[in-house]
Length: 84
Image 1 (cartoon, rainbow, N blue to C red):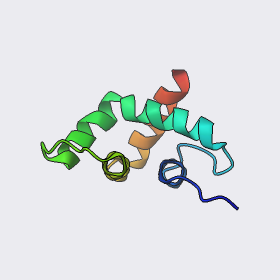
Image 2 (cartoon, rainbow, N blue to C red):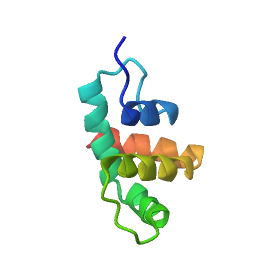
Image 3 (cartoon, one colour):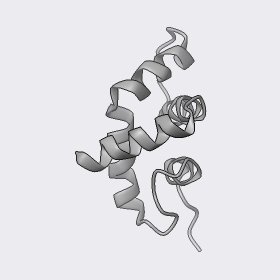
């Protein structure tokens, strides 16, 4: 079995995708999640003004932003990304 990318695990953990979703489709969802204004606002708090240069740091900041969201906020996010 191939290793699942961190963005796939992050999205599945927070219920934004099915665990069976293909890796390319999961990446498309990850980009939509990253573009969501609410996630960006939370991610900026995580980054503490320090520009993250490493891609894994972006994944970590997104994961931390999602972790800071409540279940209703995650449900609302899921609805927003499904509309796009």
